[in-house]
Length: 433
Ligand SMILES: [Ca+2]
View 1: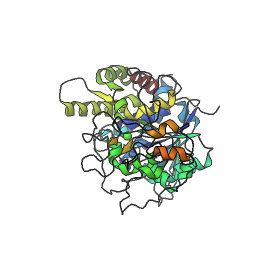
View 2 (view 1 turned 45 degrees about the vertical axis):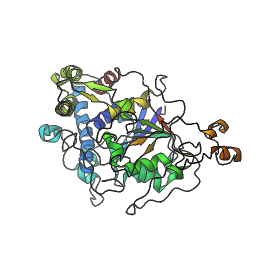
View 3 (view 1 turned 180 degrees about the vertical axis):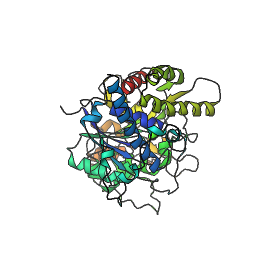
View 4 (view 1 turned 90 degrees about the vertical axis):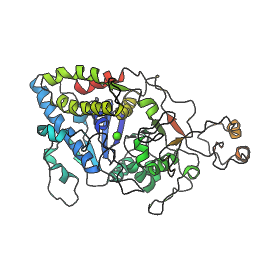
């Protein structure tokens, strides 16, 4: 049976990225196929992110041995049923060669787990897996995934090209650089994607790196703006200014379809957290029984709790927001009617050049009518083809097109889920068995 969802996970592991990968790999083969892990810079530099992916597979291998020796079900069925491609992507944002890493997740992305639990760290051969110059075959050390020596965005396009339209979704839980590189290199192939699910942005809540910006979008706002423009009836209306050092082809004037973007901003992901006491109590029996995965994951999840504690400094019990795993949970359970997006997709635009507002999301909260709306029957119609609509839609003074139904982005923002308190239990249950 074909899996219900086939996904590419574009990620910068990172504590909650690894938590997202674990949730995806622990699914059943009927629920999910993880076709590719597309690695990007982000929380930490690219090489650290790649090492963390190799480490994840290394630890899972040890976990399977341990579970078998205990007579426990091994789990992680989709990992065994479908081999995942792992490809290395961008090392920095489109416009800025200086890395925006925030080291919230420690210098190696996982609170120095490699130095402390050395027996759970992969051999250094992982580096050669992605090295074009290295001709040796190291795949026997990593039998559960297929390393690629091609850049991640090219692998992403290859998968989309080789599969029917609307069969692969992309989950982007890091800066959107890889996704933008794919979208701008070959927009028609990219638009074969079923749905792009993005963890990013802060719409009505404060940001987490600046007062208004969330890390992923802040790290490459140009990439985000370029990708979101493909959701628009008129991509040209929301194209960002392209700096002279960035070599990006503009989109063709006419595209065959629009991108479906589902956005999971801080507004909703922050309400789905795992609190320290619950985590520690729940994971301890697994650590006591000798689970390598529980020992490894609790090291960096506790590292995150300590970091949050020192940042907030209010003595309250720290809670880690499950930002990145949230997107995987959405894919696993999107049929659940409790998932909610606004009735109409929103015109959310990303600021790419602001002095204080780089990476912020702008939503028009003014009370203004959109005259074109009355004449618009179906959002998927060719909005330029109806002269009556075009005339109605021209609002004097609306140079940015905020009041036009023919302009602006169309983003589906997640505003409701199956339950704010249940997700942590789902995650623990699926990951630790
Ligand atoms: Ca991430």
